[in-house]
Length: 378
Image 1 (cartoon, rainbow, N blue to C red):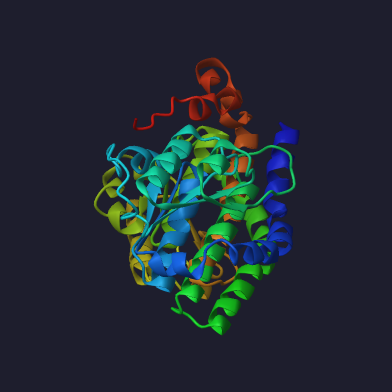
Image 2 (cartoon, rainbow, N blue to C red):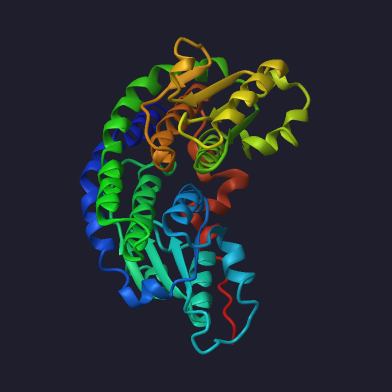
C-alpha cells in the first residue's frame, strides 16, 4: 500500500507546480474561444459534468454568476442530457443564447457526451473542457478548451480536478471581460490571483500533511463522515466526500452548511460522525459557519475546520490554510481533502476504488460511466 499512498501524496504535492505551469497557457487559449457576437448573445450559462467535473462546475458557478451577471447553473450530466431538451426538435437558433460548458478530463463520460450532442442540436453554444479534443466529448462540442496535463501516478482525481477548475475560472473571467462587466485591469488581476494560488497550494501542503496524518489515526475506524460548506465551499465539501468514498470506502455525505441544521444535525451517535467544515474567512457564509461550529460542539462531533481565520489559530480542531479569495478557495481546499483520504486509505490498508474487484468489478476501465447507452432524439 506504500506505493498507493506515495502516488496520492505526490499528486497533492504537485498541484502548485501544475497551476504555475498551466495557468497562463489556459488563459491565453480562453481568449480565442468565443467571438464578441457570441459572447454578447449569451443569456444563460450551464456548466455540466459528473463526479469531480460537476464539483468543478459547482465551485465556479457562483463566481461566474457574480462576474458576468448572467444566470449560471451547475448541473449534473443526467439533468443536462435528459431534462432540458425533453426531446424537442431544434428551434431555429432560438436557444443560441444558451452557453453549455461540458467538463470531462477523459472526454468519454457517456452521459456528458449525450448532453453535449443534445444541447448542441437544440441550438446552444457547446464548449468542452477536456484533456483530449479527439475524445467523444471533443467531437460532440462545437468549441474546445483542451487542457492536457502531464501524466502522474494514478490516484483519485486531484490534478485533473484542479486543471478543470483553472479552465472554468478562466472562461468565466474572459466572458465577463468581453461583456465589459469588469475592466481589463480587473480581469488581469483575477488571472494573476488565480495563478498565484500556486503559492497558497505550496503552503497548504505544508500545513495539511501533519494534520491529515494525525486525523487519519483518530478517525481510522469511522464508517460515516459529513463534509460541509456553502457557496464555492460546498463544492469543496462534495470533493472531500468523494475522495473519502473513492479512496477509503467511507460513507461520506456532502451537505450545505445551512441545510445541515435541517438534516444531518439529527443523525444518531453524533460522537461517531467526524465532520469536516470548509469555512474560509472571506466567505459570505462565514458568520453562519461560526454558528455551525457551536452546533457541532454541542453535538460532541469530532471535527476539522478548514479555514484561514486566525481566530482559530491554536485550536486542535482547525487547519489554518493560506488566505485566498472565496472564489478560488476550492483550489486550495483540494489539498487537505486529498491528503486526509490518502492517509486514511493507507491506515485502513484498502485499495482505491475497492480495487475494481468483487462487487465493484463493473467499474473496471470506467465501464459503468463510459459504456452507458447514448440516447439521442431522432
